[in-house]
Length: 117
Image (cartoon, rainbow, N blue to C red):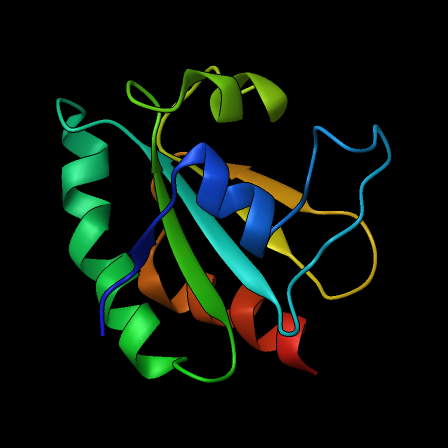
């Protein structure tokens, strides 16, 4: 299993329907991680296989998504993405947490484990 690529419509169905409300309301049934990336970004390319490995490792526990900032500018603007890669960790309740830049796999695991506790 690899990370799921999200479009605006997929985001509205799986994560949050930002066109219906201005308040954050997560729609997922389990925590999520969103990787905002670009195909031309070197650090994004290095992080991509790690994200896919985590998607496989956490399958059924955490939904892991990717958003291409060049193709989904509206989603990038929604989260104020100015640096890539940017990772958004979303608990089932509460506010999302943003982490900018590439991170070691062990650190990402720690954050994912904290989401599912």
